[in-house]
Length: 99
View 1 (tube, rainbow, N blue to C red):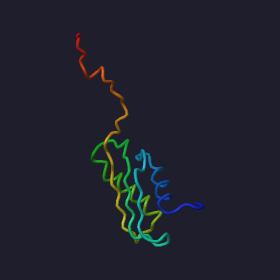
View 2: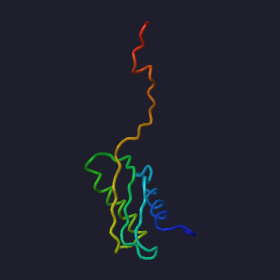
View 3: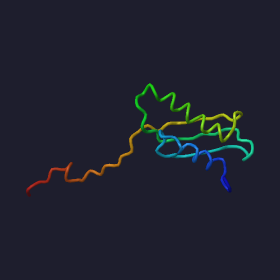
View 4: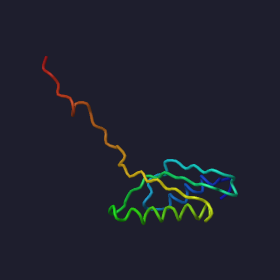
């Protein structure tokens, strides 16, 4: 991958997973050749049930390890909250008066 640092490579690797909607942050500490710590926060989606979440997180850690190697500490923080995509109008909440 030309001109892409570890953070970009991690982001691209994670976005290949069907369980990742978006990579919210990617922070990598250390030199580009020797990464000491890789911490990533991802929006997790399409997980069939709560019992499947540990396996999904293990898969995501493995994707990060493919980029940073086995010597780096890898932390994956899942953001499992559903994004607020629905707009609710004021009229549906507020009762208008007949003044």
